[in-house]
Image (spheres, rainbow, N blue to C red):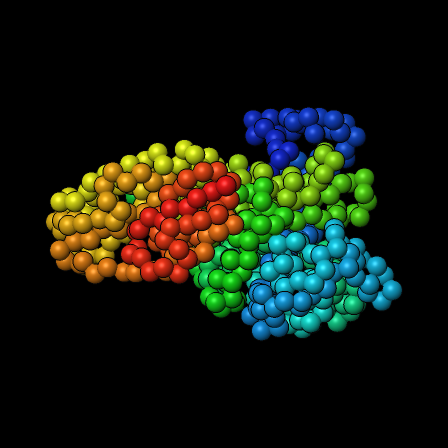
Length: 463
């Protein structure tokens, strides 16, 4: 889904069926059970489960509850020792387990570790009244209005009868159900600076007889959370992929944020298997794609969302992001010994437009600031200079006779980081990297906190 417009870029379910032979099972899944199914059960083959079926979202739902907590100032992202995990939480005598013993944590740690006790403690602090107010605002109590047939809606505990255990389990996405379309729409609101957008399947209708065109414009429903809260959530989602349970969803050259999910089937029968899922956004700073993959009853020993669904998300985004023309926003250095392979072209005395094309084709990003006609204004200088060898996706800053104002920035501390993490720390400061050696950074030139011009090259020494 495009979080800014609500456009459903793609939607797919499996097992599917053949439209040419709609009354015959066309996949092994349906063939194996077809003769045992009633006429009513056979119609399940046609169900679009992304729209018409609900499921327990599991830990992907933690994003919703964390957003509520931040918006209501119940906690912040990095309050040390805010939550405690001893491997389980006891609610009214019932022991609810976690995947590990996480100890004392901040909210960021809780999401990165996908800690259930932390979220149970959080949902108790928020309370049912506030949770349900925001669930409604996120659109989880009603249909999205996407316009597709047989749309279902989520099922939640009766707010007047909810128990302490119900409140605890909804904190980590169990007990209540949503449709995949509802969840991706809610997460798109986080990606879209807190604004909920109505999902859109059709954006234009053309009358082939008259050529009259009817546009169906994007519809903003409401501001659910503040832009500030949304920004904090996106950064924590990025940490889940960079440092937590969602590492398998990473994509070379792109920032990805998200959340893993592992939930039980609605029947609670372990023979029905589990649901492994992942919801992600990319690029993190300005998301253009939100993706949800839910795999029902995966036939593998380790069925967690990070293990099973994360790699699928990575594979899809690896193809989708370039296909949509979305430029990479991260530097990926998998082999530091070969990173200095692209030479910066000389673009001085070129027009700004021509310089940008040359640099982009060569594999560089460029920054410039002109108010006049970019097709006429010439580049007078560039940083770094031509013939400097840099990794792919490095930055070249352009200056013109119209604007030669230099901007300085502070060099961050890179010691202890990997080559990729050091490169991206410098990227955030509009600086470039030059690497010598392999391993982790043990020394850097210039030193940390040095003031340098944007576009400058920082050399790091790895061991």
